[in-house]
Length: 609
Image 1: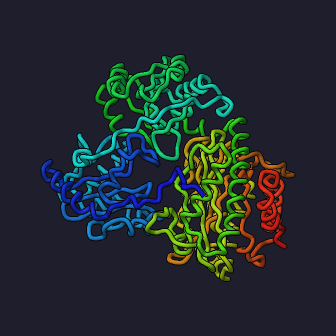
Image 2: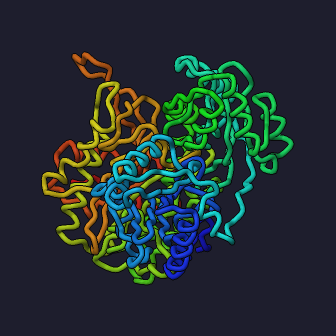
Image 3: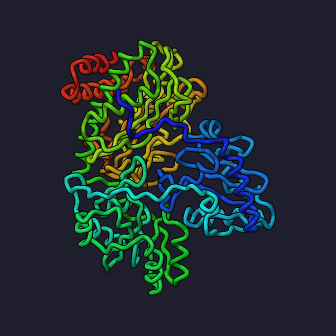
């Protein structure tokens, strides 16, 4: 197999570098008369994946996860992570410097309130935080008897002398045969939403929203085809795109010129201030607009309207072209995954296959389609105890062989122009234990409960989340992450605003694509997760129904390991769902795979009983 091109296995953390960097930061704080600083894993757009130039948290602490923050005071410091990263943080971060704090047990704001000294000043970069977060931080500082102080320049940027340059990834048009709707029509719909909000303009701070609105895709960050840029869409005038011209070809300039005015990034702040001078109301996305943008508008006399970006809701509901593209992408991706699973079944008997070998092989099978643009996130390939690390990323240091009597968890996805995929399968290497089968089956029961749910229009993800957990709860078990997230169309694999989780308050709407991924993780032993992507669709007619009903169409087509299922724990309708799913997988994928894979697929998708 060829070396993977989209994922590195190098150890990107450097614990030894943290002590002198933290010492230098504390010296800089003292020079500025500050008692502490907060450093997030964030860029000016609150992106999940950030460019190397924005990896401030990694530079300071060594932590490589996609979400986290640290507060560094003069005598103490803490790193705040969620349940996905507690184990990873312990491995990557120097424990003598940072306490690892689980955010569901102690929120960052609570810690600041308890540890910031009286009259202490906590610094922050207003370009890296939303206004809502700054408000909460300011309240925490006030409760501690201190205050929050905006910093310019960011102290990390001063100390990080070999900081990488900002990215200049080329931008391309997202063809109408994939987008399904011209950019002009999208902009008209956005203006209609602005009218409903009674706003004069919208600042597009989320690059995913910008990519969708103007039908463009970029390459400024890993795994997600976005360009780092801002836009201002006025309710009446021409939109303005603030984008580095070096990212644009003459052809792209010509395509974008009818849609709006192209300006350099440096023009964004003064242009926004000029707009605000007219006392207009500017809508800012609560989730991604930096507080620095609020400050520009308010200081110029404008009014800020903090609301969810209306583009997010429009983007989340896929049109007919995007839905058909998603189905095509999942057929293609499913065939690649099935080839991988058949390969894995043949090769693991030798005892020589490692986690890295598996990642490289899987990526090669996807590349063999000839249509893979990128992986949609770094592949999680955890064998045995590594599978219990929810967002594990294999490195050359952590890499281990796939061993008999262990489970192997593979969570991966592909970026194709017609769709974004995300799928997790857990397979047994050799003979599993009774406990493994019992817990796998409980996870599967939760997965099927979501997949087969029928629910009234307007149902939220929070209302469905417990369906995925009920079987685990009955045994005193649970998982420490959401059940599902939204997925973009050749955009972010983690897309809002809808999700299936305890915090999912957005109504699920027909046309949305979400993941269905319950799991179970036994620290130090194994992890289990079963993930398919599902499309919200109209439910089949129900006799006597008094409300419109919705359901899910499962998009992902990959066999589920029958060897890990305890049939005695399965209800009759659950077995019927699994058998029907496997029959569909077999029928759809058999013509798309080679003869050896087809033979394996035939066995892997046999009825359970």
